[in-house]
Every structure is written in C-alpha cells, then in structure tokens.
Length: 110
Image (cartoon, rainbow, N blue to C red; front, top):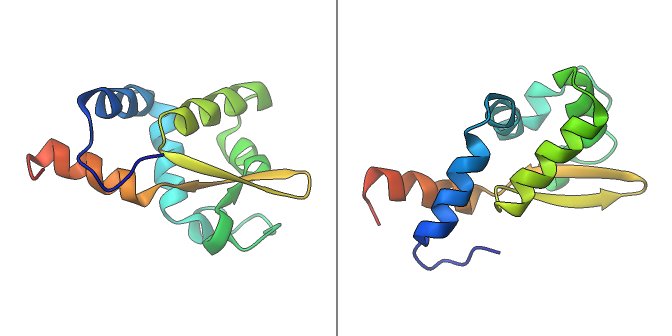
C-alpha cells in the first residue's frame, strides 16, 4: 500500500501505465462517483464504503468478464483501487490518497 511518503518514480510509472489504457481510465472516472455512475444498478452494498460492484463495472463497460477482471487486477496491482469482498461479490473503490499523490507528482508539488 502507498503510505504518506513521497511517491516513488517506480510507483508513479506503474500507476501511469495502468491509466494509459482508455478503458481502465474510464473505469477510474466511473469510480470517482460510484453512486452517480452506477445508479442504474441496484447496489449490493454501500457504495460510499466499498465502491462499485465488479458485476456493475462489467455491465456498464460491455466488456467480457475476464477482460474486466484483468483490468481491475491491473488497477489494483498499481494501487489505484482497493477491493472489498461483500458476500460473493467484489467491490472496487478508488485509492484517493494515491490519486492525490499522482496529481501532486505530475504538477511538481512534491
């Protein structure tokens, strides 16, 4: 996990590589506002606490389940999202602390 220390160059590069895919970037945008973006889908759990269900990400994206799983694994390995199991469902939430660190690093504010 990312701590409050300065973002390393390797960690920043991993995050940027993960975000370089347009669909993964779109998913990250959706996860910014999971209640609004996934309002067409009945929530399985509190989206404010655990984020969006992977089945809803899959349905909204229109991609194969295996592709969505691969994309979410890439985002999680890069530390950009955190997963939480709720029953048989995995939910994903943005790692806002890392997103701020990336923004600061790119702005030269670190």
